[in-house]
Image (cartoon, rainbow, N blue to C red; front, side, top):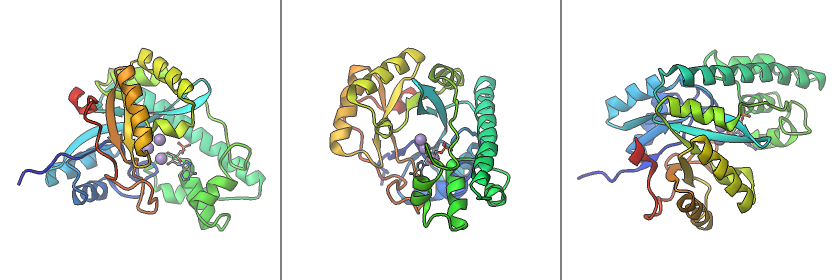
Length: 278
Ligand code: AMP
Ligand code: MN
Ligand code: MN
Ligand code: MN
């Protein structure tokens, strides 16, 4: 029997804020019937080698990916780079710079929390195990572990967000710089989870226009949380701006039931899939 292709081009491992090792992630993907998987950890390429080796063993098609944070009009935007060359120096430099920004933000976060009599430094560092890039979910987990919140969701409500202890505003690189780094590495730059930014359709169109000028070629249409109406709206935008379409669950862990690995609607037939460019 020939297996139907099934793509999931947005996922995380424990090299950023996911809970699984790249090997465990690849295994889970095969169990879910995924035939093509991209690992897209935040601001790191460190999990790609392991994932690629595991995928080879299991006969799964693996795509090298990364999710980079950047700024557009003072907003935090995530861009996914797909089919990138991990040995590309320009991409590596952009990632190194984002990692350094994360390290110095983490330091400021510890200090801000300490001002509020919260000391979770040791716990965050222990949970990073020397391999992950520090992300806010690492802080959220540590806050839960120390009893400052009952779960991650509450931790993100009481802390780490604007106006709350542990929130440190970030200066991420400009969208243009990030798109260029991905493109230089032979990758396809894709706007991640476009509904997450809570923009009006007009503002979203402005973002896409600037993205296209910056060299972004694609947009995520089907994510684990997009409904039929949103898929229709995003498909219209993709066609209007001649963008290729991507599919990605944004899986982090099984404790995040709203983003299950492989749980995405199929791409509308009228769209050009991003994998045509791989
Ligand atoms: P960072 O890039 O370190 O600022 O962390 C952003 C990450 O935090 C996102 O990629 C999500 O995985 C996670 N995140 C953001 N908001 C929430 C929330 N309310 N609940 C759980 N996870 C969240
Ligand atoms: Mn994340
Ligand atoms: Mn994201
Ligand atoms: Mn993500």
